[in-house]
Image 1 (cartoon, rainbow, N blue to C red):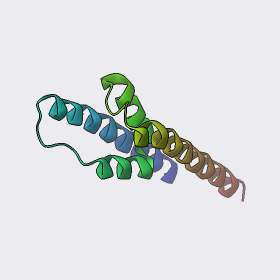
Image 2: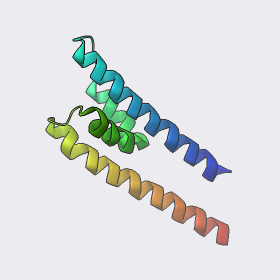
Image 3: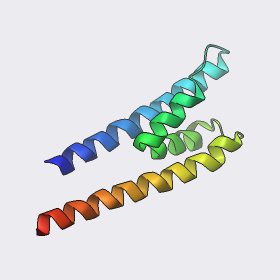
Image 4: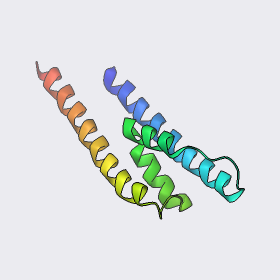
Length: 96
C-alpha cells in the first residue's frame, strides 16, 4: 500500500513542478509576477526534479540560469537515489 502511495506522490509532485514551469514561462512572456525560484527548487528537492527538468526542455525555461542547469541534474540524481533506496527498503522489508 505504501508503495502505491509513494508512486502517486511522485507522479503528483513531478506533474505539479512541470505545470508550474509552464505557468512561470507564460508569466515571464507576459511580464507578470513570477513564481519564486525558491518554490521551484523546493518542489524539485522534495521529489519533483524530473518534472522541472522536463519543463526546462519542453518550454525552454530557465535554461540559461546556472543554478537550474547545474542544480536540477543534481537534485534529479538525489531524487533517483531516494527512490532507489525506498524500493530497496521495500524489498528488504518484504523479505523479512
